[in-house]
Image 1 (cartoon, one colour):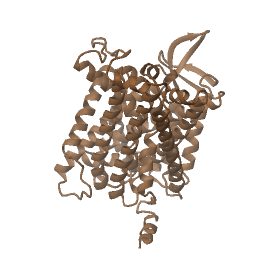
Image 2 (cartoon, helix red, strand yellow):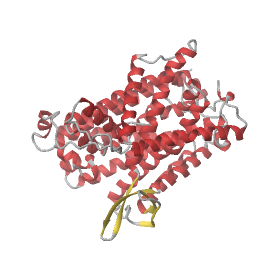
Image 3 (tube, helix red, strand yellow):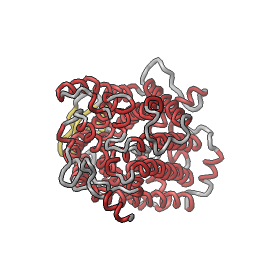
Image 4 (tube, one colour):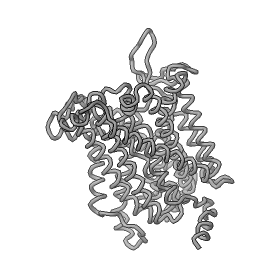
Length: 514
């Protein structure tokens, strides 16, 4: 009988999707979309900002608690509305089609595509460790300065990032089976890589007494960086200040860890392809986030067992994972870490590419996006949505930041990775807050709706997440307005676009409500 059920679930659904994702596949999408390159890099910045081993660990623990709280809350929405589009659908049903559109619009402009671009650049950057010709300074098209802060170029590194995005997009147009096979393979590989890193760090570690020294100075400030606000009237703060200063520091420090832990919600986008979605999506959210957060916290224990805090703070190019493996293996450590990150970023981007297109599909079905993105190809996947996402993500690889530094008569350029952290995290937090607040709205407006799973710890856990995420957002808005305000602006540009789109399509918005 079980075989019969499985066969039925593998056949096309009413929309044409194939329900081919089981619990393991769904968990792999959650975990695989979360684990990219961030865990191997951002701990350096967090260590500089928090200034202590305990501050580093506490930042990751806070991120972990918030992520799991959010996943527990999303489970109820996922079980109520197991439809393609996930979070887009939850916002549409909680508030109105406008709010769903604003999420989908922002997802397309920066959240999903910006993350795909950033992860692709990280992939190419570490591939360059193995093949030095893949360089950010070897140009196919030299930088064209477009403002005092930005330029556009096509380096060999950027070209490789673009090829990676195109390759994964083409693979995912071939059907869900191939996409999930790649996801399962690479998520398993990078999970194993993280486990090996943790075991090596904890068991072998660095010089004798490294961890005990870090533990003895758990919250002793060491070279704590000043958090400098973009607004002149606000004070510079550090962890050596009072309570308010400490709160600000930890809110700012959340940017890197939250970005590294994001994309866990992508499984909700693919709800139309999950077997028994009312059971498997809530379970995969909790299992996937719990697994990754546990690995992230343990990885930072491994860093502290291998490296002193100053070594973490001053890791070359912030590559903490590389620095840890170099202590254990010497020169070959950089190569081993590069291979691990190449595997990790490839698997991460596969999950992001696979899931994101399902949101644009759902928007098109509501006549709020290009109609062609609402069609499935012969392989039962939204191929046009995948291709449109690919084009925009490839474009986002091209911008470079201008440092203003000139070495030997040549200007140095950075990439948008750091700025994308701030853009993405601020925009993401806005919609996470709204979506989880939608739990309260739907409990009131649809008290009799079927809820196969009810949010654990409701109303306390959802309320704690909303309060904490709102605090982080407010701090970022005041201390990092140069990146958070553009994130807010991107969201707001969707308002006139929504009404224009609705007018042109003849959609009055009511059809989207179910």
